[in-house]
Amino acid sequence: MITINLALKPADLRKKIERLWEVSAPKVLAIDLAETAGSAPPVFTVQGKYTGHNNADAVPGFIYGSALLQYDAFWDESFLLLGAERTKQRMTHFVTRTGAHDHGSNIVSTYGNLWRLMNESRLAEDDAERGFLELALKCSGAVQAARWTFVSNGEGFIHAAHGPHSLQIETIRSLRSLALAHKLGHSLASEHDERISLLRRLIEHARTTAKWSVYYGSGRDAYDVRGRIAQESVFNVADGAYRGPGTQQGYSPFTTWTRGLASAMLGFAEQLEYVATLDGTGLDKLGGRDAIEAVLLNAARSTSDYYIEQTPVNGVPYWDTGAPGLRQLGNYLDRPAEPFNPHEPVDSSAAAIAAQGLLRLGNLLTKRGQVAEAEHYWQAGLTITDTIFDDPYLSTDPKHQGLLLHALLHRPNGWDHVPANSKIPCGESTANGDYHARELALYLQRVYEEKPYLSFCGL
View 1 (cartoon, rainbow, N blue to C red):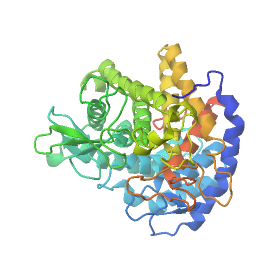
View 2: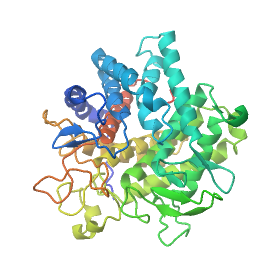
View 3: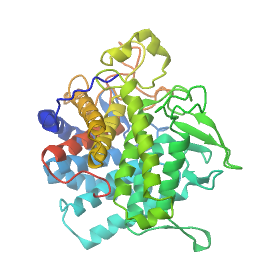
């Protein structure tokens, strides 16, 4: 269980965050210089060098979005120009990509960040540029919402790249693309020009995910532990019936892949923030604000509690809570995670995502007047951040292009680099982990500098 530092304050992390941005800047430039247009987008490091993988989902939004976050932190316009130029050159293909469930990662991280920066007056107002960005966000939200599977209760979900039967937990993060498109007044035009509400699909996907992908200790199956998640939930596409849990990236359907868990924590918290910005009229048709927020909050709190309970004391988890080699590590939850152990790898990318989820949940509960609960989650988020923004997780070696060390891409497929002197993957970075480390740093920097709250939807 995480040992939560209750005395830690965001300003206490200032030096670590400033150091992160200092080592981050040359890495962003190095990755761009090394990337070859037309080749597989870089997704992870091998011996410290970013490389692509032909079988990995392409998420260049994390790479180009990182340049935009670097600009946002210190207003170095060279990073703004880099991120904006690469977005325009290389991200058009992904705006209308119908074959994947990653529009949140690709489009919100690029076009969405640029739109947010313009709204915050950190990017010069320009009618043509704004129109360009908003058109991309509208198209992305509609395209993502069109990837739809109906379930037996008449609602449904955005199905994963693996097929119409597959609901994946991390797709909760792509609801941001639907949220922004709805905020911009867009809808999905279907057969006979039927107008489908993007807000309806967002809420229905969130409810379906909360119902089937998150466990609440209610005895649903023999492995039902409150807060555990199934990375994949499998449905019969003929009648929409739920069939059971599955996994693509975890150890088994009945264990918890921790990056998926972290994605649920952050995804539900983000959607709670978004729903709070909406007037009640649209929500009334979908069950009402109170009922919707209750579902989202229960999922966010359950997953957050499980993460805190099932993670080593320093806040960095092993890649799966049921990974078979963990039994060789003894009482591994009672000591800091060990990235160089010989049995199972840790995943720092899960920690970076989870920390932001905990902070956002804590902030939400503070606004609701639930002070004790808010402090618990907020301080847990700060504790994790304090760990991963320091050795042995922060990469300060200028020859290593990664920022957050000991992150994993895909353990079951064996894609992650295993050093010659190790039995497990370690010492490498992923585009996902590096982006979320930067986003976490920017979130807290905004807090201690008392600048506008960082939100994809512009709170």
